Length: 170
Image 1 (cartoon, rainbow, N blue to C red):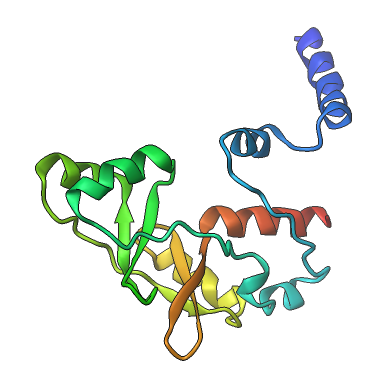
Image 2 (image 1 turned 30 degrees about the vertical axis):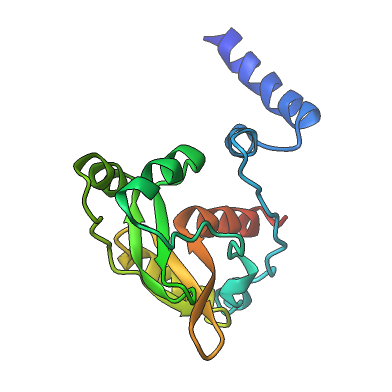
């Protein structure tokens, strides 16, 4: 047991010295995910009232074509578990899970979409947290403009990553 404890104590500082990311962030980057770092506020009250646009992903993969023939290339090209489906004007229609996209493509049918919770970019993180918890896919779409087009999204992973950075004071 003592050698394992010593190995753990040596491994953590050595890892921080050799790599700028933890193993989970490194795997995401290796898989082509672009992780954006944020500088959260120092106190919880201002963090909770920070606009969700501070932690949102503004490069979402928006699905405009849910025809069975279009689903297989989508799944092959992107590793995501869920995709926002929008109309031609980028207004939300719903959320498409990976499992439903696979089933719809295999059965040559239109996929069934989950409801898509939405928030405005100026909505506070506090308000978006409840939407994320209630979301069937752990995703909230970010809308902008008078036409309510989708400009980004926030997932539970985005929120947890940002809250971890807040807790560590990064």
